[in-house]
Length: 145
Image (cartoon, rainbow, N blue to C red; front, side, top):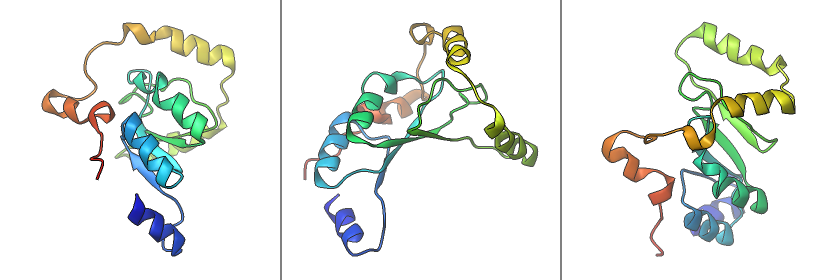
């Protein structure tokens, strides 16, 4: 973080973001220099960031860039103004549909119906397969020095 902070001070980069950091890493990094955004997986199927990551980010003013927001092909859940989804695709028609979704405005009741359809306590299984599950944000503490 110290080196990234220097790059900001030198005008070589404008913002600093982290991908899949742990709570501890976020706090330690943010103490060195404000973090602009975190890239995290977030959808109806992967909502564990709601318990610790989202509240901390909102407290510190850090945005979330949600990857796989469509739940690996399913519609994603509740998002505030501080979450920017980055849906991925390999087909042009899906890019067009993704852009078209900007015209869709969901109300609070819509979001409640969607979230109630997949209650967080009923989603089960690991987010990543096999050994990869050991490399999620929950285990991503960076060394102190």
